[in-house]
Image (cartoon, rainbow, N blue to C red; front, top):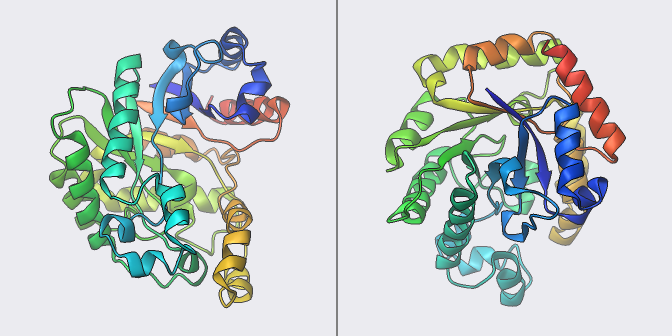
Length: 318
């Protein structure tokens, strides 16, 4: 099993290691990690991050891509103030930009020797993130994901594994076996699987009170997957404390789109906290999945906090 931590090419991450790949490599070795899973691969500078340290690549993600992919301009203009804002978010006004963007990232990942790439499977419009009243069903999102990903991979000469990550909004939640089977059978590519994000899975249950309850919930979901557990090739390991989303939803769901946009990042960070998973039962989760890749996916403010989170997680997994 290859064990890595999440990182990006953003300055806030690179500055921790003085934009020096040798410092990063030393940090990884001192913390018993094999490398990193990198976000924003297009901005890679090998002075800051040697390509040999990159074991996985987290592909770009667009939260409300379904309306764009289906070319529903009316729905998009309910989310964005005008077409210039749409273009700024997606990179263009034609849906083929998504195919081009993902193909470029996958080509880079394959070229530098990354083992896998991660693709989010979900869709959520701004208001839906608050009121949880979703326009698209899980099946609709899976169908369009299959269409999009098959077009991305068609004719692409690469061998990198593509792992589909679960979220708590509609799409791949890992709570429906038929959805998993549909996705796995629909993707016309040999090297594929699932990246289980433990934090995202927990957000499907608003009643969890502590890390032991959280681990038991995940174990129950894994048991219910039955044969589909075989598709889990990687784990994003992280935990979030109990958070009263129901109360927050009631406060925010009737606001304007602009108010929701302004609060969205902080609202999501309250839910998806990315802390170490401190229940010893997490060992059973890893044993059940037997993943090829384990990513410590933490959100931290300083390199010292990152080191402390890694230490906590390493001690739990001893």
